[in-house]
Image (tube, rainbow, N blue to C red):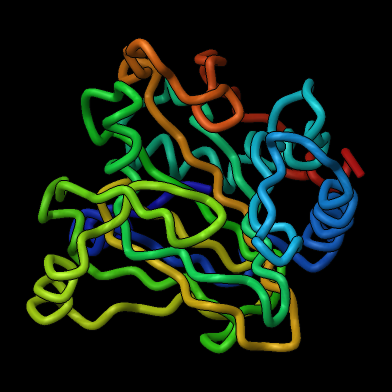
Length: 265
């Protein structure tokens, strides 16, 4: 899939693009079966809520490790996903920084605080915000179910110094409360990404985003494929995060079969 000049201008302006129904119901069904299987695994790559439900499953795109998955390995190589990433990053030498499936179980799936991804990734040793994330919704998503919110144009604020948030089972770098209030009061209204399963959103690593508690009766399953340019690979310090969060596989991803998910089923 090739982005048009208009779409590239929109990405530059807003910091994200939404693609309704990019993957069909058959592809989504294959991915959902994989999520159900992976949710049964116990290991460092599977983070659980305090209540015991799965919060996040990391590193599903590789062909080794406990959370390996052939359909997700194929997904990250589809032209529909990879070509737009290459275009917005202006580089064909792109690799997967990490993959994570955020499941948000019905009723118990908790918030992801307002944050910029680069708030963490700079600390990993990535010198530049030449990074983006492609999110594939594997369930129908509405605002009550914990939709992803993004603030249009917020990537142009640059990196904002975060604070370390320990309020949920997955601790990470998030926005300070007072600074976030200031941004919300001075920015465009946040956009909730809702729609049918198969809808996708591609967003810049400095776009402010968050998602709320899942108050609905249905699980909300999304996969986030975060990508980096090989030239921007992290220069690791003394205490790097594990490779299921920060990949050590810096080989550029090839574009492969657009029907790869179905063929991997």
